[in-house]
Image (tube, rainbow, N blue to C red):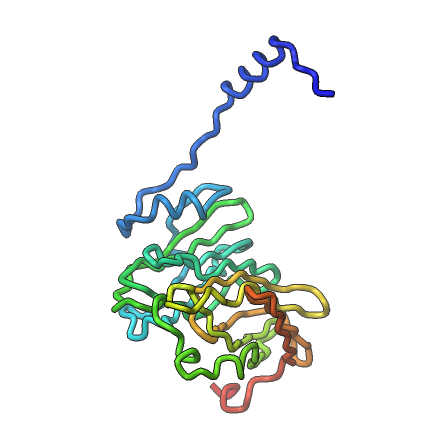
Length: 266
């Protein structure tokens, strides 16, 4: 049976609530002067203070020659204990591309994304203390990267290769440079008569334990191609496990190998 609390109790409870108002997160002024910065930062970058930091290296071309597959390389290894890496484009209809939890992997990632117009492309890195370290820049793009059908849809052969995984893992001391390509149309849902359909999660495992995991959004380019640095020595077996928004799962295994002779000689 529900019992009405005494009025005195309600008064004390309300007083406690009003005495401890929620503190709004401070969002620093944007050096890129993006119209979407405050909104995106307020939604995406919760949990700690936000600052702009040149130690987050974000490498990309100045101009998007192909807005359907724009390469971005992220290197946040100078920050130490990294918990999350967010890659997003402010003015894309689907801003976030990747939410990467490195775990035991290095805070390093190379990937290709779609750009729908001229936009800032940013990386936000959260360290163990909860702080967000942000860097990025404006990119000139012709547009249409998110609102045009993928090549495989035009060809009509996408289902013949759905979920195929190709990769190479090359040992570099106690780490392995892992290069992956997964066949998937990565449909944004912004093209007439083509529903939203994309890879949703990707995890890398070694010895049954996850060493790095990420969430992917439809703004990642068709047939996602990634480069990561994960723990692994020659002979170790890495397992790749992915799932898409239709619930299909894809798995593959790669053995860490020595660098080919022409690479080792460099």
